Length: 266
Image 1: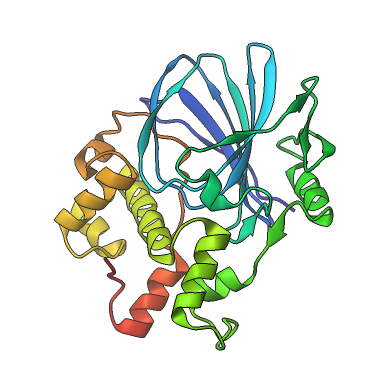
Image 2 (image 1 turned 90 degrees about the vertical axis):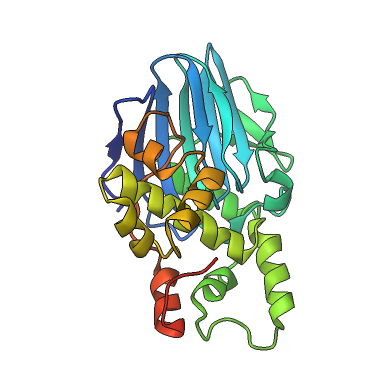
């Protein structure tokens, strides 16, 4: 059973988000949003690929998005609606590798009468917020979406990680499947976690410690590059950010602390 949807709306927002977790190993989260007015927002760094259905002024289309390694500014139209399926790390489309899609090199798939789209020569119905798991499972059974469980092992350093591979081979494999390096993934997830801590009222000094930064300068550099704002401006909540849901501390942050005596990593 999927989790109960959670709404996200901050005072400065013109984009209203609702999202839920998924029990599917292929999906991290399902979200939907609508715009109350036109505006500019910061598209924050993200590690995962996703499929997004856009509905605006009678047009409906599906776009495949890749990871984003930096924050960028983007325009948003008024009265738009979006549905997103964010895949779990290690889930990808072999015909559209994450590196090809990275940093807003999105691919919009050919549509069919506003009800479906073409992918790998087949017609697919558009998903809904409620049936995202059914939709993704159909794509997986058709071989359009793959899941590489080795990525989880690379992240947590568990014995499942193939010991026959060299470090360089493991890094290349991670980059091919996710479109980003493991170090980039950790930097992105740490910055997103820190930004949420700040938005929840955690002080800057406590955020530095809890998110595993060396000092406030390290936190500020990371957030400016990956979130688009300094810690102070994130606390003030002046700007509209893209989908930045609340998360707990990443498991690997604790793993680093157990393995190396400190969670900090540049």
